[in-house]
Image (cartoon, rainbow, N blue to C red; front, side, top):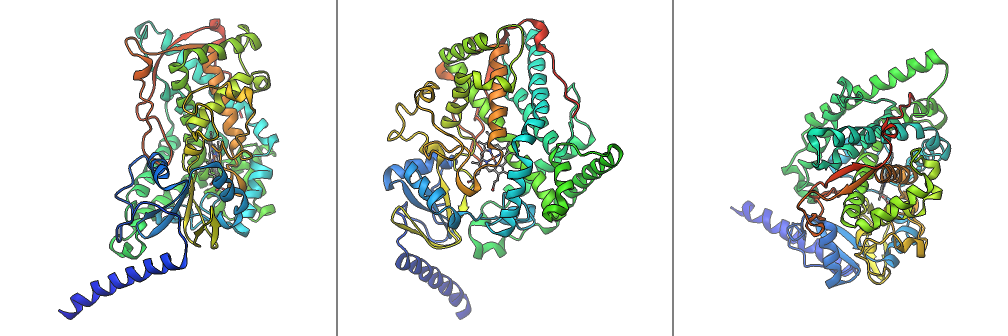
Length: 509
Ligand code: HEM
Protein backbone atom coordinates (compact mmCIF):
# COMPACT_ATOMS: atom_id res chain seq x y z
CA UNK A 1 0.00 0.00 0.00
CA UNK A 2 2.78 2.36 1.06
CA UNK A 3 4.52 1.72 -2.26
CA UNK A 4 1.37 2.75 -4.16
CA UNK A 5 1.50 6.10 -2.41
CA UNK A 6 5.26 6.61 -2.50
CA UNK A 7 5.51 6.39 -6.31
CA UNK A 8 2.90 9.06 -7.19
CA UNK A 9 3.98 11.34 -4.33
CA UNK A 10 7.63 11.15 -5.44
CA UNK A 11 6.63 11.82 -9.04
CA UNK A 12 4.53 14.86 -8.12
CA UNK A 13 7.29 16.19 -5.83
CA UNK A 14 9.81 15.73 -8.61
CA UNK A 15 7.58 17.57 -11.06
CA UNK A 16 6.93 20.47 -8.68
CA UNK A 17 10.66 20.78 -7.85
CA UNK A 18 11.54 20.73 -11.55
CA UNK A 19 9.01 23.48 -12.31
CA UNK A 20 10.15 25.52 -9.30
CA UNK A 21 13.77 25.19 -10.41
CA UNK A 22 12.89 26.51 -13.86
CA UNK A 23 10.73 29.36 -12.56
CA UNK A 24 13.20 30.52 -9.91
CA UNK A 25 16.41 30.04 -11.86
CA UNK A 26 15.24 31.51 -15.17
CA UNK A 27 13.18 34.46 -16.26
CA UNK A 28 11.18 32.60 -18.89
CA UNK A 29 9.06 34.33 -21.55
CA UNK A 30 5.37 34.62 -20.67
CA UNK A 31 2.82 32.27 -22.18
CA UNK A 32 -0.36 30.31 -21.61
CA UNK A 33 -0.49 28.50 -18.28
CA UNK A 34 0.86 24.95 -18.66
CA UNK A 35 -0.92 21.92 -17.19
CA UNK A 36 1.07 19.43 -15.16
CA UNK A 37 2.73 16.74 -17.28
CA UNK A 38 1.16 17.71 -20.62
CA UNK A 39 2.11 21.40 -20.52
CA UNK A 40 0.18 23.27 -23.23
CA UNK A 41 -0.14 20.29 -25.57
CA UNK A 42 -3.94 20.16 -25.37
CA UNK A 43 -4.33 23.91 -25.86
CA UNK A 44 -2.29 24.04 -29.07
CA UNK A 45 -4.60 24.18 -32.08
CA UNK A 46 -3.67 22.05 -35.13
CA UNK A 47 -2.44 25.05 -37.13
CA UNK A 48 0.36 25.75 -34.69
CA UNK A 49 1.73 28.88 -36.37
CA UNK A 50 -1.72 30.52 -36.30
CA UNK A 51 -2.25 29.46 -32.69
CA UNK A 52 1.16 30.83 -31.63
CA UNK A 53 0.46 34.08 -33.49
CA UNK A 54 -2.83 34.41 -31.56
CA UNK A 55 -1.04 33.77 -28.28
CA UNK A 56 1.57 36.37 -29.23
CA UNK A 57 -1.28 38.90 -29.39
CA UNK A 58 -2.05 38.20 -25.72
CA UNK A 59 1.39 37.51 -24.25
CA UNK A 60 3.76 39.43 -26.51
CA UNK A 61 6.18 38.63 -29.34
CA UNK A 62 8.19 36.07 -27.33
CA UNK A 63 6.27 33.29 -25.62
CA UNK A 64 6.89 30.06 -23.74
CA UNK A 65 4.92 27.04 -24.87
CA UNK A 66 5.34 23.73 -23.07
CA UNK A 67 5.19 20.62 -25.22
CA UNK A 68 4.81 18.22 -22.31
CA UNK A 69 7.88 18.89 -20.18
CA UNK A 70 9.91 20.42 -23.03
CA UNK A 71 10.15 24.21 -23.18
CA UNK A 72 9.57 25.76 -26.60
CA UNK A 73 10.08 29.46 -27.13
CA UNK A 74 8.33 31.08 -30.09
CA UNK A 75 9.34 34.50 -31.41
CA UNK A 76 7.03 36.44 -33.71
CA UNK A 77 8.63 39.72 -34.73
CA UNK A 78 11.57 40.70 -36.89
CA UNK A 79 13.75 42.14 -34.08
CA UNK A 80 13.51 38.93 -32.06
CA UNK A 81 14.01 36.85 -35.21
CA UNK A 82 17.26 38.76 -35.70
CA UNK A 83 18.34 38.09 -32.11
CA UNK A 84 17.70 34.36 -32.58
CA UNK A 85 19.12 33.94 -36.07
CA UNK A 86 21.95 36.48 -36.03
CA UNK A 87 23.06 37.60 -32.59
CA UNK A 88 22.70 34.20 -30.88
CA UNK A 89 22.90 32.16 -34.05
CA UNK A 90 25.65 29.80 -32.89
CA UNK A 91 24.17 29.05 -29.44
CA UNK A 92 20.77 28.38 -31.00
CA UNK A 93 21.86 26.18 -33.89
CA UNK A 94 21.34 22.65 -32.52
CA UNK A 95 18.38 20.47 -33.45
CA UNK A 96 15.85 18.68 -31.30
CA UNK A 97 15.72 15.10 -32.58
CA UNK A 98 12.60 13.15 -31.79
CA UNK A 99 13.26 9.43 -31.44
CA UNK A 100 12.11 8.86 -35.01
CA UNK A 101 14.27 11.72 -36.38
CA UNK A 102 17.19 10.26 -34.42
CA UNK A 103 16.59 6.85 -35.99
CA UNK A 104 16.09 8.18 -39.53
CA UNK A 105 19.22 10.32 -39.35
CA UNK A 106 21.37 7.75 -37.48
CA UNK A 107 21.53 10.27 -34.64
CA UNK A 108 22.29 13.33 -36.74
CA UNK A 109 24.81 11.89 -39.23
CA UNK A 110 23.05 13.86 -41.98
CA UNK A 111 22.64 17.65 -42.20
CA UNK A 112 19.05 18.46 -41.21
CA UNK A 113 19.16 16.66 -37.86
CA UNK A 114 22.83 17.25 -37.00
CA UNK A 115 23.67 19.42 -33.99
CA UNK A 116 25.93 22.36 -34.65
CA UNK A 117 29.50 21.07 -34.36
CA UNK A 118 32.45 19.70 -36.35
CA UNK A 119 30.30 17.22 -38.32
CA UNK A 120 27.73 19.87 -39.17
CA UNK A 121 30.36 22.38 -40.30
CA UNK A 122 31.95 19.76 -42.58
CA UNK A 123 28.71 18.63 -44.16
CA UNK A 124 27.46 22.18 -44.55
CA UNK A 125 30.71 22.97 -46.38
CA UNK A 126 30.03 20.09 -48.77
CA UNK A 127 26.59 21.62 -49.43
CA UNK A 128 27.80 25.18 -49.92
CA UNK A 129 30.95 24.50 -51.94
CA UNK A 130 29.89 21.42 -53.84
CA UNK A 131 26.21 20.44 -53.98
CA UNK A 132 24.62 23.88 -54.17
CA UNK A 133 27.46 25.76 -55.88
CA UNK A 134 26.20 28.15 -58.58
CA UNK A 135 28.07 26.00 -61.13
CA UNK A 136 26.23 22.82 -60.16
CA UNK A 137 22.85 24.56 -59.92
CA UNK A 138 23.42 25.81 -63.46
CA UNK A 139 24.61 22.39 -64.66
CA UNK A 140 21.39 20.84 -63.35
CA UNK A 141 19.22 23.45 -65.07
CA UNK A 142 18.31 21.17 -68.02
CA UNK A 143 16.62 18.82 -65.53
CA UNK A 144 14.47 21.66 -64.20
CA UNK A 145 13.60 22.83 -67.71
CA UNK A 146 12.79 19.29 -68.78
CA UNK A 147 10.43 18.79 -65.84
CA UNK A 148 8.73 22.17 -66.10
CA UNK A 149 8.12 21.76 -69.85
CA UNK A 150 6.85 18.20 -69.22
CA UNK A 151 4.33 19.78 -66.82
CA UNK A 152 3.25 22.28 -69.50
CA UNK A 153 2.86 19.49 -72.08
CA UNK A 154 0.78 17.43 -69.68
CA UNK A 155 -1.54 20.35 -68.74
CA UNK A 156 -1.90 21.20 -72.46
CA UNK A 157 -2.90 17.61 -73.27
CA UNK A 158 -5.48 17.55 -70.50
CA UNK A 159 -7.02 20.96 -71.05
CA UNK A 160 -7.29 20.59 -74.84
CA UNK A 161 -8.83 17.14 -74.59
CA UNK A 162 -12.43 17.72 -75.81
CA UNK A 163 -13.73 15.53 -72.99
CA UNK A 164 -12.33 18.00 -70.48
CA UNK A 165 -13.66 21.13 -72.15
CA UNK A 166 -14.44 23.78 -69.53
CA UNK A 167 -13.47 21.41 -66.69
CA UNK A 168 -11.11 22.45 -63.95
CA UNK A 169 -7.77 20.76 -63.31
CA UNK A 170 -6.22 19.77 -60.00
CA UNK A 171 -3.17 22.04 -60.16
CA UNK A 172 -1.31 20.16 -57.40
CA UNK A 173 -1.11 16.99 -59.52
CA UNK A 174 1.04 18.68 -62.19
CA UNK A 175 3.18 20.72 -59.79
CA UNK A 176 3.73 17.68 -57.58
CA UNK A 177 5.14 15.68 -60.48
CA UNK A 178 7.68 18.43 -61.25
CA UNK A 179 8.80 18.51 -57.62
CA UNK A 180 9.03 14.73 -57.43
CA UNK A 181 10.95 14.23 -60.66
CA UNK A 182 13.18 17.22 -60.18
CA UNK A 183 14.21 16.21 -56.66
CA UNK A 184 14.77 12.53 -57.43
CA UNK A 185 16.79 13.36 -60.55
CA UNK A 186 18.83 15.99 -58.77
CA UNK A 187 19.59 13.78 -55.78
CA UNK A 188 19.56 10.24 -57.19
CA UNK A 189 20.15 10.96 -60.87
CA UNK A 190 17.02 8.98 -61.75
CA UNK A 191 13.63 9.72 -63.26
CA UNK A 192 11.49 7.10 -61.64
CA UNK A 193 8.50 8.01 -63.82
CA UNK A 194 8.11 7.45 -67.57
CA UNK A 195 6.62 10.09 -69.88
CA UNK A 196 3.11 8.67 -69.28
CA UNK A 197 3.54 9.24 -65.55
CA UNK A 198 3.94 5.51 -64.82
CA UNK A 199 6.36 4.76 -62.00
CA UNK A 200 9.09 2.10 -62.40
CA UNK A 201 9.90 -0.50 -59.74
CA UNK A 202 12.46 1.66 -57.93
CA UNK A 203 10.01 4.59 -58.00
CA UNK A 204 7.29 2.48 -56.40
CA UNK A 205 9.76 1.40 -53.72
CA UNK A 206 10.87 5.01 -53.23
CA UNK A 207 7.25 6.19 -52.74
CA UNK A 208 6.56 3.30 -50.35
CA UNK A 209 9.64 4.21 -48.28
CA UNK A 210 8.66 7.90 -47.99
CA UNK A 211 5.07 6.98 -47.05
CA UNK A 212 6.28 4.48 -44.45
CA UNK A 213 8.68 7.08 -43.02
CA UNK A 214 5.80 9.51 -42.51
CA UNK A 215 3.69 6.82 -40.87
CA UNK A 216 6.47 5.79 -38.48
CA UNK A 217 7.24 9.42 -37.58
CA UNK A 218 3.60 10.25 -36.85
CA UNK A 219 3.06 7.18 -34.69
CA UNK A 220 5.20 8.60 -31.89
CA UNK A 221 4.10 12.22 -31.81
CA UNK A 222 2.55 12.39 -28.33
CA UNK A 223 5.04 10.26 -26.41
CA UNK A 224 7.91 12.38 -27.71
CA UNK A 225 7.07 15.35 -25.52
CA UNK A 226 7.24 13.69 -22.14
CA UNK A 227 10.68 12.05 -22.01
CA UNK A 228 10.20 10.46 -18.58
CA UNK A 229 7.04 8.73 -19.82
CA UNK A 230 8.70 7.26 -22.89
CA UNK A 231 9.12 3.86 -21.30
CA UNK A 232 5.34 3.54 -21.67
CA UNK A 233 5.60 4.10 -25.43
CA UNK A 234 8.55 1.99 -26.55
CA UNK A 235 9.95 2.62 -29.99
CA UNK A 236 9.01 0.00 -32.54
CA UNK A 237 12.68 -0.91 -32.93
CA UNK A 238 11.98 -3.60 -35.46
CA UNK A 239 9.82 -1.39 -37.70
CA UNK A 240 12.46 1.36 -37.66
CA UNK A 241 15.28 -1.08 -38.36
CA UNK A 242 13.30 -2.56 -41.27
CA UNK A 243 12.57 0.89 -42.63
CA UNK A 244 16.23 1.95 -42.41
CA UNK A 245 17.39 -1.26 -44.09
CA UNK A 246 14.89 -0.82 -46.92
CA UNK A 247 15.95 2.79 -47.49
CA UNK A 248 19.64 1.87 -47.44
CA UNK A 249 19.11 -1.04 -49.84
CA UNK A 250 17.43 1.14 -52.46
CA UNK A 251 20.00 3.92 -52.05
CA UNK A 252 22.95 1.50 -52.27
CA UNK A 253 21.46 -0.04 -55.39
CA UNK A 254 21.30 3.41 -57.02
CA UNK A 255 24.78 4.33 -55.77
CA UNK A 256 26.13 1.12 -57.29
CA UNK A 257 24.51 1.92 -60.65
CA UNK A 258 26.22 5.31 -60.61
CA UNK A 259 29.59 3.82 -59.68
CA UNK A 260 29.29 1.36 -62.60
CA UNK A 261 28.29 4.13 -65.00
CA UNK A 262 31.25 6.25 -63.89
CA UNK A 263 33.61 3.33 -64.47
CA UNK A 264 32.20 2.83 -67.96
CA UNK A 265 32.13 6.47 -69.02
CA UNK A 266 35.23 7.59 -67.13
CA UNK A 267 33.49 10.78 -65.92
CA UNK A 268 31.18 11.84 -63.12
CA UNK A 269 27.75 13.37 -63.63
CA UNK A 270 26.41 16.40 -61.79
CA UNK A 271 23.76 14.68 -59.65
CA UNK A 272 24.23 14.80 -55.89
CA UNK A 273 24.75 11.04 -55.67
CA UNK A 274 27.70 11.20 -58.09
CA UNK A 275 29.07 14.32 -56.44
CA UNK A 276 28.96 12.77 -52.97
CA UNK A 277 30.51 9.49 -54.06
CA UNK A 278 33.39 11.21 -55.83
CA UNK A 279 33.92 13.59 -52.88
CA UNK A 280 33.65 10.87 -50.23
CA UNK A 281 37.40 10.63 -49.55
CA UNK A 282 38.13 14.35 -49.87
CA UNK A 283 35.60 15.20 -47.13
CA UNK A 284 35.81 11.92 -45.24
CA UNK A 285 32.08 11.19 -45.57
CA UNK A 286 30.68 7.98 -44.12
CA UNK A 287 28.12 5.96 -46.06
CA UNK A 288 25.53 6.92 -43.41
CA UNK A 289 26.21 10.58 -44.13
CA UNK A 290 25.93 10.16 -47.90
CA UNK A 291 22.65 8.27 -47.60
CA UNK A 292 21.40 10.75 -44.98
CA UNK A 293 22.23 13.75 -47.18
CA UNK A 294 20.50 12.28 -50.22
CA UNK A 295 17.32 11.68 -48.24
CA UNK A 296 17.57 15.14 -46.63
CA UNK A 297 17.14 16.61 -50.10
CA UNK A 298 13.94 14.64 -50.52
CA UNK A 299 12.64 15.62 -47.08
CA UNK A 300 13.47 19.30 -47.40
CA UNK A 301 13.36 19.97 -51.12
CA UNK A 302 10.43 18.09 -52.58
CA UNK A 303 7.24 19.45 -51.02
CA UNK A 304 8.47 22.96 -50.20
CA UNK A 305 8.73 24.27 -53.79
CA UNK A 306 5.47 22.57 -54.84
CA UNK A 307 3.61 24.08 -51.88
CA UNK A 308 4.77 27.61 -52.78
CA UNK A 309 3.68 27.21 -56.41
CA UNK A 310 0.24 25.91 -55.44
CA UNK A 311 -0.34 28.88 -53.11
CA UNK A 312 0.98 31.21 -55.82
CA UNK A 313 -1.52 29.83 -58.31
CA UNK A 314 -4.35 30.20 -55.80
CA UNK A 315 -3.41 33.87 -55.28
CA UNK A 316 -3.14 34.48 -59.03
CA UNK A 317 -6.55 32.92 -59.66
CA UNK A 318 -8.05 34.94 -56.82
CA UNK A 319 -6.35 38.12 -58.08
CA UNK A 320 -6.84 38.31 -61.89
CA UNK A 321 -5.27 41.79 -61.91
CA UNK A 322 -1.93 40.35 -60.78
CA UNK A 323 -2.21 37.41 -63.17
CA UNK A 324 -2.81 39.74 -66.10
CA UNK A 325 0.03 42.07 -65.13
CA UNK A 326 2.48 39.14 -64.89
CA UNK A 327 1.30 37.88 -68.30
CA UNK A 328 1.72 41.32 -69.86
CA UNK A 329 5.32 41.36 -68.65
CA UNK A 330 5.92 37.85 -70.04
CA UNK A 331 4.37 38.78 -73.39
CA UNK A 332 6.53 41.89 -73.63
CA UNK A 333 9.80 40.21 -72.67
CA UNK A 334 9.38 36.68 -74.08
CA UNK A 335 6.67 37.19 -76.71
CA UNK A 336 4.71 34.45 -78.44
CA UNK A 337 7.48 32.74 -80.42
CA UNK A 338 9.49 31.06 -77.69
CA UNK A 339 9.23 29.84 -74.10
CA UNK A 340 10.73 31.31 -70.92
CA UNK A 341 14.08 30.04 -69.61
CA UNK A 342 15.91 30.79 -66.36
CA UNK A 343 18.11 33.27 -68.28
CA UNK A 344 15.02 35.46 -68.65
CA UNK A 345 14.40 35.88 -64.92
CA UNK A 346 16.49 39.05 -64.62
CA UNK A 347 14.28 40.72 -67.26
CA UNK A 348 11.08 39.67 -65.47
CA UNK A 349 11.04 41.70 -62.23
CA UNK A 350 7.28 41.44 -61.72
CA UNK A 351 7.35 37.64 -62.01
CA UNK A 352 10.11 37.57 -59.38
CA UNK A 353 7.96 39.78 -57.15
CA UNK A 354 5.01 37.38 -57.56
CA UNK A 355 7.22 34.51 -56.34
CA UNK A 356 8.48 36.60 -53.42
CA UNK A 357 5.02 37.83 -52.42
CA UNK A 358 3.80 34.22 -52.42
CA UNK A 359 6.64 33.19 -50.10
CA UNK A 360 5.86 36.14 -47.83
CA UNK A 361 2.21 35.20 -47.35
CA UNK A 362 2.63 31.44 -47.59
CA UNK A 363 6.03 30.25 -46.35
CA UNK A 364 5.86 26.45 -46.67
CA UNK A 365 7.56 25.94 -43.29
CA UNK A 366 5.83 28.68 -41.25
CA UNK A 367 7.75 27.87 -38.06
CA UNK A 368 10.97 27.00 -39.97
CA UNK A 369 12.60 23.97 -38.40
CA UNK A 370 12.99 24.36 -34.66
CA UNK A 371 16.46 25.24 -33.38
CA UNK A 372 17.73 23.99 -30.02
CA UNK A 373 19.74 25.99 -27.50
CA UNK A 374 23.19 24.53 -26.80
CA UNK A 375 23.80 27.13 -24.03
CA UNK A 376 21.76 29.44 -21.80
CA UNK A 377 21.00 32.63 -23.76
CA UNK A 378 18.97 35.78 -23.34
CA UNK A 379 16.54 36.84 -26.06
CA UNK A 380 14.28 39.88 -25.75
CA UNK A 381 15.34 40.20 -22.10
CA UNK A 382 14.15 36.66 -21.26
CA UNK A 383 16.13 33.51 -20.58
CA UNK A 384 16.24 30.63 -22.99
CA UNK A 385 17.76 27.75 -21.02
CA UNK A 386 20.09 25.25 -22.67
CA UNK A 387 18.04 22.42 -24.20
CA UNK A 388 14.95 24.54 -24.98
CA UNK A 389 13.68 24.66 -28.55
CA UNK A 390 13.30 27.96 -30.36
CA UNK A 391 10.84 28.53 -33.19
CA UNK A 392 10.74 31.62 -35.37
CA UNK A 393 7.18 32.17 -36.56
CA UNK A 394 8.21 33.42 -40.01
CA UNK A 395 4.56 33.34 -41.09
CA UNK A 396 3.64 35.86 -38.36
CA UNK A 397 6.76 38.00 -38.96
CA UNK A 398 5.87 38.32 -42.66
CA UNK A 399 2.33 39.48 -41.77
CA UNK A 400 3.31 41.86 -38.99
CA UNK A 401 1.47 45.18 -39.57
CA UNK A 402 4.32 46.97 -37.75
CA UNK A 403 6.68 46.26 -40.68
CA UNK A 404 4.36 45.56 -43.64
CA UNK A 405 1.78 47.90 -45.17
CA UNK A 406 -1.56 46.12 -45.77
CA UNK A 407 0.11 42.85 -44.79
CA UNK A 408 -2.77 40.56 -45.79
CA UNK A 409 -3.03 41.92 -49.31
CA UNK A 410 -1.37 39.93 -52.14
CA UNK A 411 0.42 42.83 -53.81
CA UNK A 412 3.71 41.89 -55.54
CA UNK A 413 4.30 45.59 -56.37
CA UNK A 414 5.43 46.13 -52.78
CA UNK A 415 8.75 44.54 -53.77
CA UNK A 416 9.15 46.82 -56.79
CA UNK A 417 8.77 49.76 -54.40
CA UNK A 418 11.25 48.29 -51.90
CA UNK A 419 13.65 45.48 -52.74
CA UNK A 420 13.53 43.12 -49.75
CA UNK A 421 15.98 40.21 -49.60
CA UNK A 422 14.39 36.82 -48.82
CA UNK A 423 17.51 34.69 -48.40
CA UNK A 424 18.23 35.53 -44.78
CA UNK A 425 19.50 39.13 -44.82
CA UNK A 426 16.25 40.95 -44.06
CA UNK A 427 14.57 39.70 -40.91
CA UNK A 428 11.09 40.75 -42.06
CA UNK A 429 11.04 38.06 -44.74
CA UNK A 430 12.47 34.67 -43.81
CA UNK A 431 10.91 31.85 -45.85
CA UNK A 432 14.34 30.15 -45.95
CA UNK A 433 15.41 31.05 -42.41
CA UNK A 434 18.70 32.89 -41.81
CA UNK A 435 22.12 32.44 -40.28
CA UNK A 436 24.11 29.25 -39.99
CA UNK A 437 21.17 26.98 -40.68
CA UNK A 438 19.64 28.98 -43.51
CA UNK A 439 18.22 26.72 -46.23
CA UNK A 440 21.14 25.63 -48.46
CA UNK A 441 18.67 24.98 -51.31
CA UNK A 442 17.24 28.53 -51.29
CA UNK A 443 18.49 29.55 -54.75
CA UNK A 444 17.45 26.25 -56.23
CA UNK A 445 14.01 26.61 -54.65
CA UNK A 446 13.63 30.18 -55.95
CA UNK A 447 14.66 29.11 -59.48
CA UNK A 448 12.21 26.23 -59.53
CA UNK A 449 9.31 28.25 -58.09
CA UNK A 450 9.92 31.18 -60.49
CA UNK A 451 10.28 28.85 -63.45
CA UNK A 452 7.08 26.94 -62.65
CA UNK A 453 5.06 30.12 -62.10
CA UNK A 454 6.56 31.72 -65.23
CA UNK A 455 5.66 28.76 -67.45
CA UNK A 456 2.19 28.34 -65.96
CA UNK A 457 1.42 32.02 -66.58
CA UNK A 458 3.04 32.38 -70.00
CA UNK A 459 1.45 29.24 -71.43
CA UNK A 460 -2.02 29.43 -69.87
CA UNK A 461 -4.72 31.73 -68.61
CA UNK A 462 -6.07 30.46 -65.31
CA UNK A 463 -9.65 30.94 -64.23
CA UNK A 464 -11.76 30.00 -61.30
CA UNK A 465 -14.11 27.00 -61.89
CA UNK A 466 -17.49 27.92 -63.38
CA UNK A 467 -19.99 29.11 -60.77
CA UNK A 468 -17.38 29.73 -58.06
CA UNK A 469 -16.58 33.17 -56.64
CA UNK A 470 -13.00 34.29 -55.81
CA UNK A 471 -13.91 34.71 -52.14
CA UNK A 472 -15.02 31.07 -52.04
CA UNK A 473 -11.48 29.78 -52.67
CA UNK A 474 -10.43 28.06 -49.45
CA UNK A 475 -7.20 29.81 -48.46
CA UNK A 476 -6.70 27.83 -45.25
CA UNK A 477 -3.78 25.55 -44.53
CA UNK A 478 -3.52 21.89 -43.75
CA UNK A 479 -1.92 21.23 -40.35
CA UNK A 480 1.63 19.86 -40.36
CA UNK A 481 5.28 20.85 -40.43
CA UNK A 482 4.72 22.04 -44.01
CA UNK A 483 1.56 23.84 -45.04
CA UNK A 484 -0.20 22.43 -48.07
CA UNK A 485 -3.51 24.09 -48.98
CA UNK A 486 -6.31 22.44 -47.04
CA UNK A 487 -8.43 22.30 -50.22
CA UNK A 488 -6.16 21.80 -53.24
CA UNK A 489 -6.79 24.53 -55.80
CA UNK A 490 -8.79 23.63 -58.92
CA UNK A 491 -8.68 25.90 -61.97
CA UNK A 492 -9.58 26.04 -65.64
CA UNK A 493 -6.55 26.40 -67.92
CA UNK A 494 -6.74 27.92 -71.44
CA UNK A 495 -3.66 27.85 -73.69
CA UNK A 496 -2.40 31.26 -74.84
CA UNK A 497 0.63 30.40 -77.05
CA UNK A 498 0.99 28.64 -80.44
CA UNK A 499 0.59 24.88 -79.99
CA UNK A 500 4.17 23.97 -81.03
CA UNK A 501 5.42 25.66 -77.83
CA UNK A 502 3.77 23.06 -75.58
CA UNK A 503 6.33 20.30 -76.17
CA UNK A 504 8.49 18.87 -73.42
CA UNK A 505 12.19 19.74 -73.80
CA UNK A 506 13.75 16.46 -72.65
CA UNK A 507 17.20 16.47 -71.08
CA UNK A 508 19.20 13.29 -70.94
CA UNK A 509 21.28 14.07 -67.87
C1 HEM B 1 10.78 27.19 -51.80
C2 HEM B 1 11.53 26.23 -51.40
C3 HEM B 1 12.15 26.06 -50.04
C4 HEM B 1 11.88 26.68 -48.84
C5 HEM B 1 10.86 27.77 -48.58
C6 HEM B 1 12.81 26.14 -47.86
C7 HEM B 1 12.85 26.53 -46.53
C8 HEM B 1 13.72 25.99 -45.59
C9 HEM B 1 13.75 26.36 -44.20
C10 HEM B 1 12.86 27.39 -43.53
C11 HEM B 1 14.72 25.62 -43.60
C12 HEM B 1 15.10 25.61 -42.10
C13 HEM B 1 16.12 26.66 -41.79
C14 HEM B 1 16.47 26.67 -40.31
O1 HEM B 1 16.47 25.63 -39.66
O2 HEM B 1 16.78 27.74 -39.79
C15 HEM B 1 15.31 24.77 -44.61
C16 HEM B 1 16.33 23.89 -44.38
C17 HEM B 1 16.85 23.05 -45.33
N1 HEM B 1 16.53 23.02 -46.67
FE1 HEM B 1 15.14 24.20 -47.60
N2 HEM B 1 13.60 25.21 -48.46
C18 HEM B 1 13.25 25.13 -49.80
C19 HEM B 1 13.81 24.34 -50.77
C20 HEM B 1 14.85 23.48 -50.56
C21 HEM B 1 15.46 22.66 -51.60
C22 HEM B 1 15.06 22.69 -53.07
C23 HEM B 1 16.41 21.90 -50.99
C24 HEM B 1 17.34 20.87 -51.57
C25 HEM B 1 17.18 20.23 -52.67
C26 HEM B 1 16.42 22.25 -49.57
C27 HEM B 1 17.24 21.69 -48.63
C28 HEM B 1 17.28 22.05 -47.30
C29 HEM B 1 18.14 21.41 -46.30
C30 HEM B 1 19.12 20.28 -46.55
C31 HEM B 1 17.88 22.05 -45.07
C32 HEM B 1 18.52 21.77 -43.71
C33 HEM B 1 19.60 22.81 -43.42
C34 HEM B 1 20.24 22.65 -42.04
O3 HEM B 1 19.66 22.05 -41.16
O4 HEM B 1 21.33 23.16 -41.87
N3 HEM B 1 15.46 23.21 -49.36
N4 HEM B 1 14.69 25.02 -45.81
